[in-house]
Length: 494
Ligand code: UD1
Ligand code: CA
Image 1 (cartoon, helix red, strand yellow):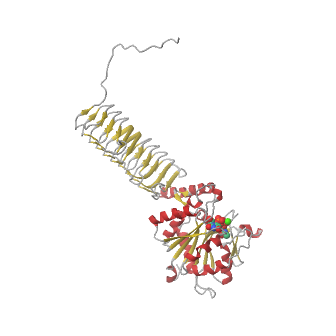
Image 2 (cartoon, helix red, strand yellow):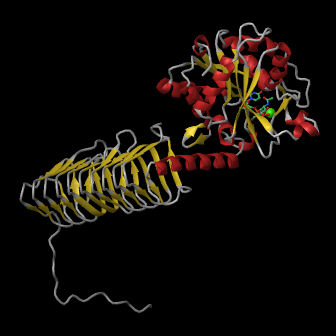
């Protein structure tokens, strides 16, 4: 990089425009709080401030301001290393007017990067290059203190609606013309302004003061500062990228879904490049977990196979050789090597997490809830729910069962239709089932209760007292037999 040493240490302040209404979303939720990959759009943008080690981020709010401000402040408490500030813009008189509202909060010594709250997928490296372009430019005679106005641009096959980059014969940028104000010749220009720029703060303030709303939309356009920079002899640089996805905005549910798919496809490709086998990268999702707020992150060992339609939320780790069947939802879980998760299984660790041991078999149609900790070779079959319970190596619950608040020993066989009655209506109690116990079908284990090692519980029992090790516990009505029993017969209607 050719930037002088002192230029690169200029503090960075990020300005995020988020006051717009988002009319085309037809939603009660402010547009910038709509989610992409489980994360609100504005949070994607605020992440940039963290990636770039910004000094501050100023969010310009208007529509839904209180909601947007409360949500952002919540994320920053967890994630932020930068100063988060808000500027209200009411009414919304254009992008230039938006930035004017933030001026009082902006220090004069930094570089300002302007972003939009509805453009979520800009990559930090792209912004770093843009910032470097703004900071590196050597001073011309007119711009004594140095720095340039750097615009992020992209060439689009259909530039309709965007501001066009107007250049002179020598190729130098002269200004930006908004689509609605552009002549036919200008509308033929395919290089457009992305809405993202970097500029030294001390240059910005005087230009903003000179903006007018004398244009087709009657708005104060931020883009008018480009022509002012040219007038003032400040270098204007266009940093052009090829990747339109990085500057794509969300204006409608259709665009949101398109961006979501494009983003997921990129995540899928990155995993496949590491060797993960996805049956169909177009039917695969990794998201933030909405409830715990955990960042979407799928970490895979070698030879992981994932069938179609799976959704991974929060942090999920899949060990070597793990196979995930079709249409599983897996959140905040660690699944050890060689485990097989059959189709339609729902695993949600929430805050407590779920762990599945090596070689375990889970599902189809199984449900593992927070605090389920399964050892090696554990089998959990169809319609079995496990919550806040430890199942030691080799334990099995294969059909239609509930294991809640239980400690289950090695090799325990837990019969079909059996449940732990862990809740007395006020408090939760634990069930302890020691190693090698056999719980028959359709039993109710009323907690707190202990089944000793190697004990057997007869089918259909409601167990309220401890069953000692090695004993048989049966608690059900004795079978009665009436020989030659005549069933009632149907009476003729009177
Ligand atoms: C803007 C650019 C255009 C560029 C395009 C890229 C201007 C004048 N034009 O146009 O050159 O090609 O982005 O997407 O800047 N906002 C406010 N307050 C306002 C108006 C807008 O906060 O008063 C926010 C919006 O919520 C949005 C962002 O600014 O996040 C951009 O506004 P939008 O109206 O979408 O700009 P465009 O007209 O698309
Ligand atoms: Ca507009």
